[in-house]
Image (tube, rainbow over the protein chains, first blue to last red):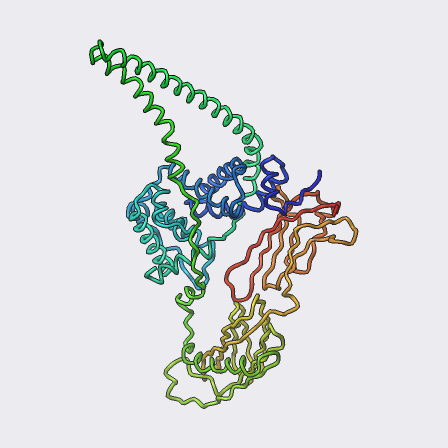
Length: 179
Length: 371
């Protein structure tokens, strides 16, 4: 078996599309970490994240032939992944405008911040947000969408998106400060 | 972005999670690859079929619309003279239905295309330093931190502006007696009972010498290392593994039973050792014994904690080390590994950083170097 040196992104993608197994493996090794982290951010627990990740990875391999090499590959993959996460949230009939009183009114104060805030802790905190807050916060603060775009993506109004973000920040702030 | 706290939260999460990478459980690749192999072929044929059938339907609709419209036009033309109006309405309802059907078929597509927009790139994100946020977090309460910190911060200026470099010495000049009236507090200042000397035997090392009355002295080097010792003449030495030049707050505590108990802060300035600053993480190696690129290794600025793990595609570990100098010769339990792609995970943590750096690279193991 000749080992391709997949240093070239274009070559890697083209080989994946052709169905070269080694290229697909290399592709998976390269991007699975980043994409799984995204799925974790949009999900409430690990299991849900794994489902999302598996499906979006399959989707990516199917859609890879549509990638036109205009812009970064990783950016494109992230968008596909985020889109898939949103889709599966919608399919599970998540309400993006639910209030915290309905969803998580009695969260125990386990989370304490020392001066050391670890990525894992932040991830766990994010996962404990109600789905509406989490999704809007992810899209706005981390992905960098505007409220207008978020409104279109989630099918909610712009002002709902703003309130959700505000509440999400408040919630996070509260748990970061007081634990 | 009115409230700085709010954007700090955004920044905290973006910095920590925006580029986060978490390796999914290893069994997932098996699921994905099994789906990918069959799926891509199947999906293709389905797609082709779908387009074929949709073309057929569309052409059929178009044809029927054309024929009906033509029929109606002819009919109308004839009917204007001698057919009553009622029948005219009924015949007209047919083509309009067809047209609306056609509209339904086409409209959702365009809506979808407009609905989800990604063409616009995400706006550039402002670069806030994380430390701004961390500083606002509650600090450990050192009793004399505020007061003493101020006094000693002048000292660090002395160290770093006047005689920057190796082997600089500072002597604690202020030796003042303490008075009995401060005996109310537990924290009576120990200054005057001991002297400290700070030297830098290397760019990345700090040595603190203590000489004074017999007591218990502790030094917190600000990188998570704390040393404790008791006596009259003591030396505390610590090496810092940093990526770039950096300040550390060193806390020196002194406790002499029945006499005094306090602590003071000193700032020290350390740099990475220069010879280690050339970084290299190769992506290909050829363990065929020709003397070129026969092993896989990582060259980074020496971190405080280091771990290199190489796994194969099944997720089993083939090489693992905590030593930066160790090299992988391509063998697992004495047997040469197969040619192919491996994933190397490099975990490193530097002094003063509370986050582990995780870097993943793919490594190609090849036997024939055909360049």
